[in-house]
Image: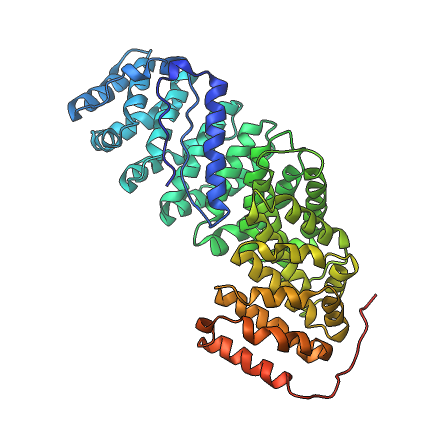
Length: 498
């Protein structure tokens, strides 16, 4: 779960400083999310005038003191703000949160303030609820659920600050349980999100993306959420927002890129998305971004590119109604993948793996894409990655196997690029998966390119560590090599397709 970081004395920090720190926390969250679907909570921490003496606020409260705060809020004068501010600050303590929801009538009183005549009181009540929603205690978040109709209602309001706060609170509550998500779906959260996507305020758009991504990551999303999202017309708006300029709403674009990734990876109806132009628009955006990273430095752009690349990779394995794989006849995509791999290989190697995964999906069972890699003379770039991590190396070898599998002409081309000498050096590595993929590629070579026999015979057996030779998968491939190394008649030849 996402934890609130302590900043010390807030009186020394301005609003912009805290927004920057919040962005840094969100960037760290997005970095974690690229490795796995990560559902988390966020707590807005923008400074206000009443927070300037936060360090002087009492750090512990008794149940009697919490009950007194509730009484003060309920029966106090029209100016309830001081009591609400004190409550909000107290609710940053997890024990106080539990004491508060146990206090008689506490949630009823707090939720009742959402309809109070003064907007400042409504806002402070919403901030208290937001503090409660960030709790890790299921009982605390369950106590917040009666407020969801009010939160959804205020999303059609005119205050971007209030809308942003409500959206992050909803995003936090979405995490808690399937029952909470079902309640929000019945109350119309998807149409409400569609309305929020028309907002001109970047903070509202980013908060909408966050809350929507929480919903799309739920375990029941493919059954209950994604179909509603597709029916609501949210996807065209998501694509529209993804095409904002890099300088404007960068965090917002990252959130919606992940939303689209969760929609695509659910595989609910990707053919519908493709027929609606999603793949074409994503490719154009991807090519534009790849060109952009070669011209200017945009900190964090890899966090935007990662979900976009994953969308492309998932859409490229779809099949149409005739059972044919979706194919791309645009060499610019392949070039863009290689541009990004070279651009990010030093500082963000994970992007190399992401791009290789897409290249693998493109070259598998597609001789045209495989031919493009060769005709564009991109093989030497692939060989440069032989010195990278095991995961990257395995993906490179998988792509090379895809290409070599198309027959003699392809193998001959790779042989001319001195691929085999690079492979034999890899056989000495301690990684069994690398050894297995190297042997697979050598077996393909011997099947289609008999002239490679001498190179393989000279190096392959000698380079494999003794510890690998007892591995059943290695043994199987070694036996296949021995079979192909026997005297054989030359196989048919072929030419690369135009």
